[in-house]
Length: 169
Ligand SMILES: [Zn+2]
Ligand SMILES: [Zn+2]
Image 1 (cartoon, rainbow, N blue to C red):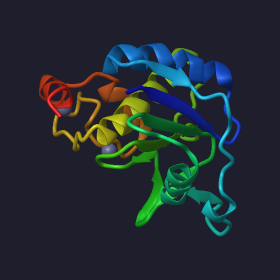
Image 2 (image 1 turned 90 degrees about the vertical axis):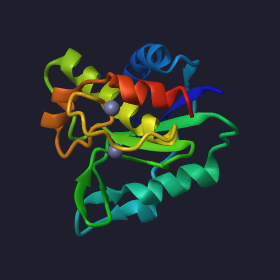
Image 3 (image 1 turned 180 degrees about the vertical axis):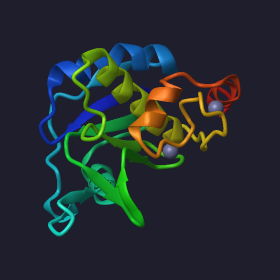
Image 4 (image 1 turned 30 degrees about the horizontal axis):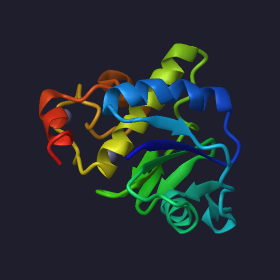
C-alpha cells in the first residue's frame, strides 16, 4: 500500500514533492508523486459559479486512475464546490481510495504557512479515505474546516484518538 500524490490539471511539481516526505512520516507508508497529470474533466466546470464540482473530479479519478490497494490524493489549483456548499477545501471517499484538495483558498505569501495548509488538508482528506470521521477536537487534523482559519488552528497532526483509530482500521 502506498500514497500517490496526483496533480489534477497543472500544479507546481516542487510543491507536490515537498508534500511527499511529511505525508510519508505522518501515515508511515511510502508516498510518491505521480508523473502524469490528470486533466480536469470539462463537465466538472460550472460556468455560472466559475467553480469546479469536486465530486465530478473524484468520479473522474475513480474512472481513469488505477489504484489497487493504494490511496491517491489529487491536488488542483481550481476552486471546488460540492452540493449545498459554497466551496470545499477538499473531498474524499469515506472510506475508500480517492481524495482531492484545492490549493485555491490555501494560498499565502508565507510559503511555509502555505505548505502547512496544503499538508493539513491533504492529511485530513486522506484520513477520510482511511476511514476516519470528523473529530470534535479543534486541534486535530480531522476537525472539519469551514475556512482556512480553522485549517491554521488545527495543523496536520492527529489527536491521540484519531491516531489510534487510523492504525486500528
Ligand atoms: Zn472532512
Ligand atoms: Zn481527532
